[in-house]
Length: 75
Image (cartoon, rainbow, N blue to C red; front, top):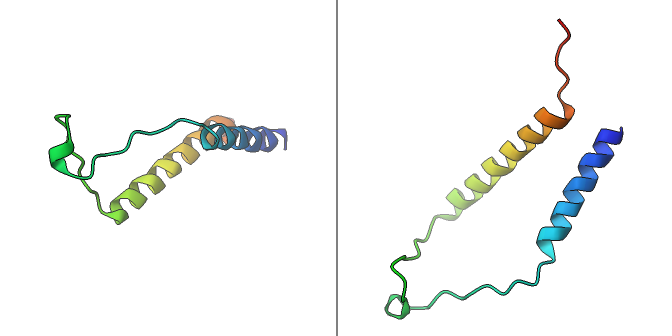
């Protein structure tokens, strides 16, 4: 039970730390003629963004399970 409390406490701390930052982000220029960088913004489909986010969260979940909750079978 203490492992679950530790896991939930760690996840809560992570959410609080990443969600309360006061960092100001630079805005992207509205037109490509206003860009001064050699990089250009490429719009991605919403389904792709959601899929990548879900896959990333699933991989993080698998890693947390593997390192914190997995018990190897005794041979």
